[in-house]
Image (tube, rainbow, N blue to C red; front, side, top):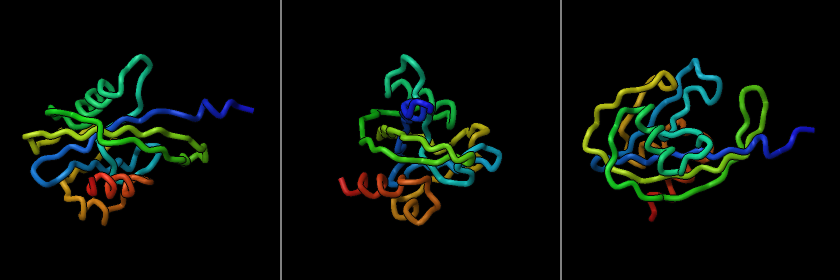
Length: 140
């Protein structure tokens, strides 16, 4: 039997704010998992990285945006299942940051981006458990 810890990972992302809206990215149809779901910019932490370094790297790779004043917004866990049926226990760490630019340069992982209010985001097809985090974030 495989070690269950092999299916654990840390994902780090950002609630990027511009005015009263936040940036959400839609997963491309050609990605392996969670196609067409809206998510925050972010990704898997690499060996030796800090959460802040991971967030900055992933945001730059996925959006090309420079951020101002990132602060820890929260963390949550999620049990997610890949298209191949593999279940992952994920720790998601989210920073809140601001940007002055609304011009996003998407990576091939995503096919669309939107600047959304919290209300708009909660009505969108968000990645599993992200809606709960967004709602809690908006109430703080």
